[in-house]
Amino acid sequence: MRVRGPSSSWTTCTAVARTGAGDEAPRNAFGAASGGLCWTGIPFGLDVRRSRWCAAPRTSTWPRAVALAALTGRLVSVERNSETPMASRELLARDAHRPRYHFLPPANWMNDPNGLIHWRGRYHLFYQHNPLAPVFGPIHWGHVLSDDLVHWRDLPIALSPTPGSEDESGVWSGCAVDADGTATVLYTAMRKRADGSRSELPCLATSSDDDLRAWRKYPANPVIAAPPPDLDVLGFRDHSVWNEDGTWYQAIGSGIRGSGGAVLVYGSPDLRHWDYAGPLCIGESAQTGEMWECPDLFQLGDRHVLIVSPIPLGRTIYMTGEYRQQRFIPFYQDDVDDGGCFYAPQSFTDAHGRRIMFGWLREGRDEAAVRAAGWAGVMSLPRLLVPRSDGRLGMQPVPELRALRGQQTSLRDVSLVSPRHLDVSGGALEIMAEIVPGTAAQVGISVRCTPDDAEQTVVVYDAMRTSLGVDRTHSSLDSAVEHGTHWARLELGQAEPLSLHIFVDHSVVEVFANGRVCLASRVYPTRSDSLGVNLFAQAGSAHANALDVWTMASVWPGAD
Ligand code: DQQ
Image (tube, rainbow, N blue to C red; front, side, top):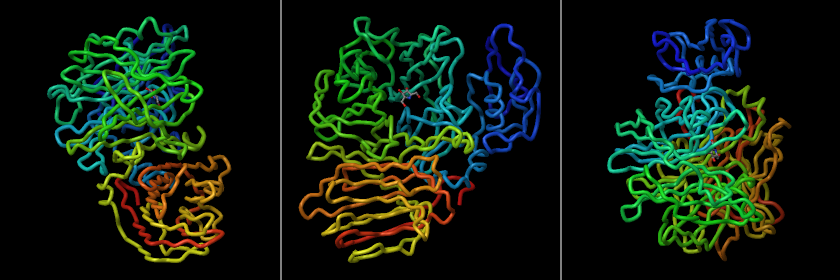
């Protein structure tokens, strides 16, 4: 049964709750209590009525309604609200682990970026979002827009699960295109059935207002009724859509049992009627996993790039190669990011012709910790994708991020034989360094360091391994958070220095190296003085040609 709260009770958020047949009126976990509850560390006042309704009072803010809904355990959908949920950004802003200039929602859970589009001069980022709790749950599309890819404005939730429809269990990942002036998204409708089975089917929604606030789901959804009948597929979800000579094509992530991850292609004259055109590409499960999530196919220079996030690898790979007539032949394959938390990215072309990618940075801490924090999931910085003659995928932070630079500290021509403490500190920093490794076995930069080095995260180039690593062995004195080291192969050419571009943002350390390697990692220092930066060389000498460090401004209200 679907019910909706009395409109007079709602101003900021409408919760759609559902009770099973014969259910008692939903009471929250504390009975029909009210007021003063502390949930996920955030004090929320509650007003629970003994009825079939879970309603937030007129005075409620977004997180109150969400907290209430989560406590009942029965809420399945949060519909579009008319006000922005900025209050909760301020509530969480001073959390020591909360990033200050990476994008993340006001509260609760986020995973994949979705529906990226540069629409009427502004950037739109939609995201997989459980607005009810900081854990994966009923997935909606959260929505923000930006003039500059750096400062974001929260907009109401764009897409919510519709009870009784194909997407009643979640509005899963999808992409956006401009179809003759109408913004159109293809997304995966998730429906879980009582017998444990589930369907994943492509659905369509449209919007044409300036801010892309109002979305209308296509009444004849789903636009594809089932996966190809002659294929035994493991999954059928996530979308990449493009237009070729007037025909729309859609790539859907899948896997063929006994074979490997796959991307299936469909063609359509109008984005609503689709015919299967065959597999775009099929992998081998031993190498690239059983099922490919979040396919993203695009042209970059004179090549094409296919990005997929394979299950069960839990990391994202790219392939550069040749695309012709709905088939993709890979020539080169590598990981998009080796830092261990980057997953399910999506890219888009902006009005300047730039290909820009965002990826989801997963948490490196357990459920109890994220429930206590009240939020989970961060978006990577927007990465500019650039073609390279060696077939690799070039990645750089977008230049717009320079707008956040504050105080600058610079060094030039420094010989390194031992660690050097730099006269800079901060939880939000940008660091650029050009270092000639020389005879040093290891050279690099430590960030989030305490003065006694009890906590530190080490970005290290290891000459013997010819690899760049992010060593989190001592990142945190909290033994419950992740501590591993992640390595990326990085062979420096003759006379090629190590070029590091490091973004430190509280619990995020995002590293770009030599234009071709990225490592995004999550770290959770416990000490308030884990703010230092050290430059080091070990077992030999190195030379830093240049090093620049900037403090970075916050883009979120209430943060320092
Ligand atoms: N997450 C989504 C799926 C996608 C996966 C659900 C990747 O659509 O396959 O939130 O993180």
